[in-house]
Image 1 (cartoon, helix red, strand yellow):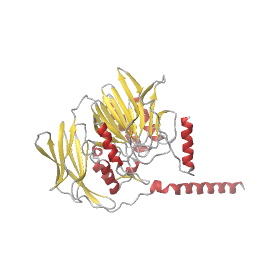
Image 2 (tube, one colour):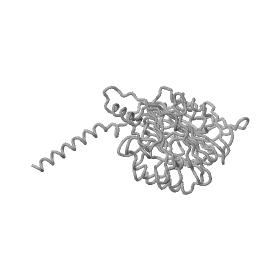
Image 3 (cartoon, helix red, strand yellow):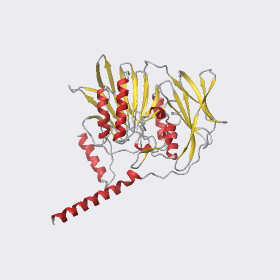
Image 4 (cartoon, rainbow, N blue to C red):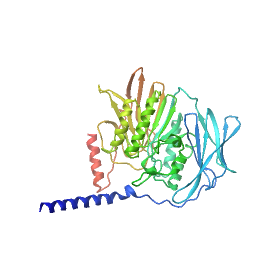
Length: 441
């Protein structure tokens, strides 16, 4: 009788597990089909990004489905000669079409430039950009988390508005999930989102889980590396890692989507980079938050990278993935706020139900955010803005004097945005609303 009872328990457990797996099957394994598409007939989807250092740039574009002689025409403003920089091309065939992608590397730049992409007798529009002098100087950049789904043109609008309000920004950093899924239509949407931005200032991103195909085997399209070629020379094995030194700061960009043995390779890379870094300010960028807003997620990523971040003086950790805003400040042995400062941000229309961990300083839900990071001598300032009205939502200053580092919390008195309307009859929404009420009390 006892043996029969054990068998029945095992059968029930297997059935429950199988049912749960069935509900998660599409989340884990289903890749949406890619609709057939045609390549661009003229150079398009032009993108400006960094190469190996702050004085180098890469221009990428797409044109036709066969390789043709291609180049970038580059003019030093206001009255320099027109230079011709040859481009390397590669034909990429996806599931439902193929297109030729081109990469041109521009080195040792300083000042203002105009450029356009050319493939045989076909050319793009002219764009311009500026490269500041290398070395010690103040600078700023714009950080955005997940973009992902369409906002019906709103993404491009609010990014343009953000840069109009903060014209000092020199480049844009994305925390992954720039596209919803690796298909041509979503890439087309991504380029519409950054139209007029990614052609005039460098745009860099880390990989997000939506950039990968779903499945047991992790796989990312070659198209990603053709659009963001800086990974081609800095990857470790097939981990897309990248380091950029800019004035007094250094950014370290990780591929947090990988299996543990791949994350271990990245840990060793990050360890070497941090040991060699002479930067005054160190900024880590990865997709998955080291301290999850959803409970006990991302523990492997935390185990791999958080100890290094604390040991080697990472000042700021920029993260995405969990579709809310949050900021957490480390504290020293005496309880004083210190680095690292961890932030989570996103500008996707999807919002997640989060936990309200008391280790965090501030939360924001049911909206979208971007951050301005300003580096000026002994002060690093991080300011978060809500995308619709561009009002300041959160801000802090990391101040370094001699051997001491301290935090000035400028966002403490700015009210948290925690408005939430549960869908009638949805138990998960109702539980989340109750969690918000408990946190507010």
